Length: 359
Image (cartoon, rainbow, N blue to C red):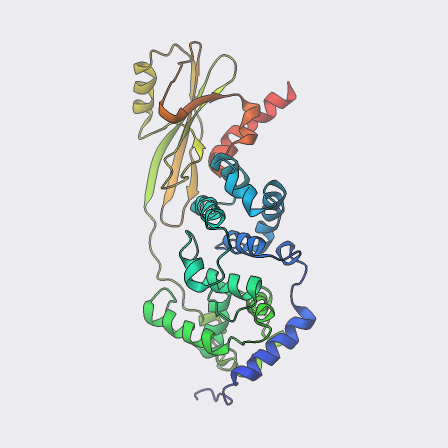
């Protein structure tokens, strides 16, 4: 027997129910909600892209302490910005944040229009809507992951949200429901509802303020929404990371290209095979004192698995690498704390840093 749905809630009724719940249960003590301004809201929205609130909070606090004003971020070297972002992942966000800060300072004002915000690198339609709503109290819909989940369940919208037709349908619903008044609270309430009650797994439907009109709950199909992304087998890439150390325990690091995986971060020389790494050392006329191969590890990106094997090599005649724009340098273990390093590289080097600190 088909489920019988009650009459659809009007946007006004939906807004009232959601905001009443938010006033009692919504999150109001997040660090970016304090001393709210466009810079803090923008920074939080960029950090929250594909990242949980609990993970973002310490990064946000450290970032604001280092760069309290947008002008501080604009003036900072990109290496300092990437260092503060190190471990948060999706490093293009940090590079775009830095570029956008420089553009904002150059134009002399923080954009407060949809087109003005979306002209900045790293800001899409939903992020722009969130900034306008929460920093400028302008009525604009959003459609982040939490909101997609809430709306897909509320309206039983089938199909993966990455498909154009489904995304358009969800945007239309979000636009229809977004109020003109209290839009900042409404936007936060939608995020909170998805993050605290309408969660990906084990949603607490009994406490949801709009559960009497949720089509997925009424039909007992909450677990079916939103429709998951079609399963795709991730390819595997294999690399050798050369952990080259001189007699003073300094480590050779290379700066990666500005774009691509780990763009702009410091990393270890990378090779397709151990033979290639050894040939490189031979071509540099290195006198090898010791060499060992460590256990392979895996780091998963959104679109592939990286299986990497650390090759530890110690040399007694460190090469004096002089490369254009200082793309390769020797660092002692204690200095790595000041660098922008990808998480796998940081994990490889951290034991060396601890040993150095214990000396």
